[in-house]
Every structure is written in structure tokens, then in C-alpha cells.
Length: 450
Image 1 (tube, rainbow, N blue to C red):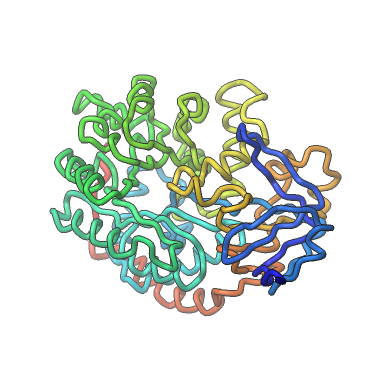
Image 2: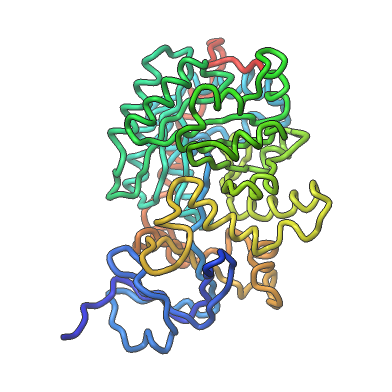
């Protein structure tokens, strides 16, 4: 009996692989067989010639990588790209961003999310973790554009119990949405905007409903020191005493994690992960960065992220990968850390684990979802190739991504976006910008006081 055709076969590429010890390797002149949205096999190109497929991609001269994961962002904030520049953190929040966000409508969120998804698809990001407002609109955009996403409706204690209830309702309503491409989380904003009672209630809801938690914590050293001065505990110690570390939690940023916090993170009974967005830390002139090496030694996955484009100006995870490697070399004073292969591991398998997809994504292997990007290394800036890992991390750019595939569906082919009409989105968003940026009302959604 002749086997049915595969859905997609990608041939003549070099495939990034993970060995049993989670080392990075490369299989040359390989082919990837995809059936029903899942990688069925990684074989030689010669073997693939004998197989039939509904769709074939000749990827000669290209490298196939697992799709990148943006482990912490606020996708709709691309609408605020460049409106709050060269400001300290407190002024950035209080004087610009939180007043502007008081104007947000669901339509603004939808258009911002569409533009963000277009940017991420073009940069080889196949999945993102978002933590924002009006998230029903973001879920609809994910469904429409074909990406994978880990979504949570953010809330502050100043919203009363309704904020927490909306976060739970969103998580339960959209869990497993978009044909299984959406996973959900509870999303308290941060220990400095969500009180202990709300955090404890969130932890209880997470246990009851089998949901993870995604929040900002110990974003910078000032927050950690302010928490110690006011309450006698660090933000991570707040997470411990409220039960957040007893459930699966994704901590955004963590540049203020102190040595005293490390045993708490190591002994947490829940799965702890940290998302690091280095470009924003440099822009805000924060004195420390995410302690990647210390966390890795504890077995805590550190995923790569961009944060929102209002602070980072970009949703380029490729840049986050390179910056993570460079900043770790600088802060540790050790050029051997992070290596290019270690950086690729953070960008692939560790990032997938950080958002709870460690068994489904993050590598190109049988049984994994077919979230794949094809990277063209024929440009002059990537030639010659003496060390493929170093070329990918330190020479290649997000614009070298030629094709982006999620669940076996091609979302971008040869740099052409197939699921989002960018000019139409830009036009409509541009019409709404004046009303969105108006701060004459004097409102803001919250106050930053750390």
C-alpha cells in the first residue's frame, strides 16, 4: 500500500539538531518531513526524493532552525514604538506609557497585535508570550495570522477582584484555542502593583485550574532594594510567601534577582522560568542584567524575549540572542560564556520550555510541532562560514529569515507574508494614533513607585 503524501517536505537544508545531552549540532544536506503539522522525520535529501508531498520547499543554502520564541512581550505596544524615549523607568511609565495606555481601545490592541505578529513572523518568531490588556483581540489575531502564542490578561490590584476574575476567565476561555496553538496563563502584573492577597489568590486559582502564572518580578535592582527597604523582603521572597513559586511561573526580566533569591528559585515546587530582554535593560541603563549563568546552574530555563516595542523598539529575538551572548561575556568577564551554541540553546529549547512548550516545540525532531524557520546564509555578511553556530548568532540577522512555518503551515515564503496585510494595518493604525497618544486628560492606568 502506497503511503499518503506528506503535507510538507523541506529539502537540501542544514538542520539544527539537539543531542541527548542537549548539545547543539547540525545535519547537512537534510530533509524535514512534516505530516499533520508535526515533524515526522529528519532524513537525508536523497531519501526525501523518493517521497511524495503536497508541498515541497527546496531550501538549498539555508539552515532550518526551530522557530524562535519571544518569551515575554506586549505585542500591541508596537503602536507606542518611539513615543517614550531616553527616559528613566519611573518617568517612562508615569509620564508617558501609562497615561497613553488609558486611551487604549480593543481596536488599538488588535491593530497593534497584527503589526507585531507581522514583525515577528518576518523575524523568525513562531511563538510569543504576551501579557497585556484586551487580550481577546490578541487571541483573535493569533488565530487569524497562524502564529503560536502563550497569552494572559494582565491585571492590577487597583482594578479590584474583577481584574483577577477577568484574567481567569480569559485563560479558561482561550485555553487550547486557535486549533491548539494558544496556551494561556494567569497574568498579575507585578508584586509592586498586585498585593499579597491577590497574588495568593492567583496561586490558588492556578493550582485549582492547572494554569501557569506569568508576571514581572525583580525587573531591576531598584525594585529589589525598594521592596527590601519597605517590606523587608525581595520581590522573589514575595512570590515565595504568596505561593506563586509553588505553581508553574514565568518571571519576566529578573535583573534584580539577588543571591539570597537563588535558593528560593532552586527549591521552588513549581516549574520556574525567567524571560530575559537585554536590549531594554541597556536602554533604561539598568546596572545589572538577568543572571543567566546562575539561573542555568540551578537548572532554571532562561528564555529570550524582547519586552514590548515601547521600551525595546523592536521585536527582534535574533538581536536578543546575540545581545544575551555578548552581555554575558561582558558581565562575567569570561569570553567562553555564553558560547554561540549555548545562545542557540537558549533561543530554541530553553525558550520553548520557558513558556511551557518544552515537549511540543523548541527542536526539529520527530513528534515535535512543525514550527520551523529557514535562514539564508548566502549573503556577504554571513560568508564564509567557518563556525555555523557563530555565524547564526553573531553574523546573521532577522532579515535573513526567508521562510516561517507554524504547525506545518507556511506563514512567510521567500520574505512574502501570507497571512497579514501590513499596508492596510499601518494605514488604519495611523489614523488612530492621534487619539491614542492624547495625554491631555491627565489619567493613567497605574502609578510606578518603586
